[in-house]
Amino acid sequence: MREMGRRSEHAEHPFRAMRPDDGGAPPVAAPPGWATLWGRPTVLIIRTGQRDIITAACPAAFNLGLRPGMAAAHARALVADLDVRDAEPDADRALLDRLALHAARQWTPSASVTGPDGLWFDLTGTTHLFGGEARFCRRLLAFLKRLGLTARIAIAGTPGAAHALARFGSDTITLLDPGQEAQAIADLPLAALRLDSDALIAAARFGLERIADLYPMPRGPLARRLGMRSVDRLDQARGSLAEPIIPVVPIDAPRVTRRLLEPIGTPESIAQVIDDLVDDLVALLQTRGLGARAVQLTADRVDGEAQRLAVGASRATRDARHLKRMFGLRMEGLDPGLGIEAMHLAVPLSEPLGAEAAGALLETSRKTRDLAPLVDQLSSRAGGSALFRVSSQESDVPERAMRRLPPLATPSGWPGWKRPARLLRRPEPLSNVVALLPDHPPRRFTWRRQDFRVVAGDGPERIHGEWWRNAQEMWAVRDYFRVEAEGGQRFWLFRRGDGVDAPTGDLSWYMHGMFG
Image (cartoon, rainbow, N blue to C red):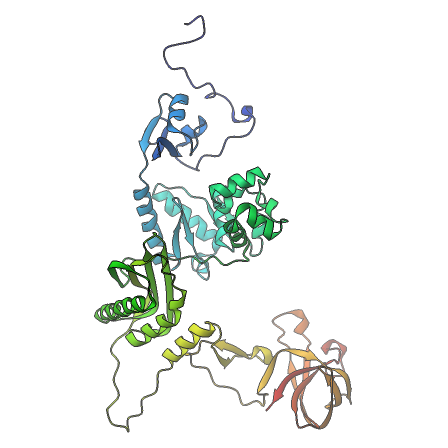
């Protein structure tokens, strides 16, 4: 046997001493910073059908050619002293859930678990609290290192792009500017789009390997070849299709549950269960002295899929009638499928809410009506950005002297200046203007293809530019006039420049508002 080159004992791995550059393509990079815990190559396996499949491997196993997805029998044949241990996906999920809850309490209110090995954070409006995105990433890596964990972080404008760059990128920290998602993920493989196995097999059959190969393809043929789900994943990664992050709810948040004896699917039965859940939730909120600002409904279907509905309140509330009405307006978005077997109500956002003084029973007691229920209903129908109040803001430039406030906010007082009832978002240029310089209003002008003849005018009111913003406003001057046309229309016009010094403006005329 020795003459034939065979040995009964196991031999050393033939590629153990080979340099990484000598084997053709470079090996797949091992997870950064992993340490061999038991002193020999270690892999974790999970039972899939009749085979044991590797789900994770230590750096020593990676260097020996072992990869996730490889059969455990093949791995044992390559490495004789391999330490094989059973994976614990439930324990891994529990750890990710704890990390997501910690993130929701400490870093951002929107944190979610993605896949078996990742977390999603919505960092909108939060990174400035930690010194910026780069510093937050470094702090997060240091926090995970203290826990014995390693990570690769990517911050992008879409969850799909961040998911792809974190798993298939080459850098430990990737900070992507807004609008650069399509270019950043173009060279990544199609698996970075989270496509299913059938779509990946079909893509390989058609010679599609990179994400950039999908960009020039028409939507119709692409959907027929890879499926509509693949088109949605591509749109989500590039930002043309929204992909909301469903945040985890802290354990201590108010939560009530109703488990049903039989699945339900009719609108009446669903509405009845929602009413019962709201009554239970209101009692729980009253016990804790809280008011709900956001309430999330989760319906568990018999096919294992969860349907979710969320309603928000402009002011903390625990009014059962109001919450029932809000869910009634949104209930058409709930798909029961084959039936719903359990329903949950959770309050991810709450505020302290004490007792309110009730008005007297006499008609002479005039209690101010609460507009919050009306605002919530209108926002549910028209959208959250459709309702607002206008308030003044310290600025001499008219288009900057106002701002939008939430509908229940208290606006500040308006100055005593004479301003039009309607102010254009942007001043519109006038043509065919006839006016005497330097301080006379126009006698006639053309606006929106209509000629106007001025019969009366008042002005000018001179407004200077805000020189601290940019150099163009250093010498900018506007002379505003209030004029009345022959038909009775009253306009607010201005001329750029004072008519004497050229740097103040080019003497062009603009329409800025209308009176009445």
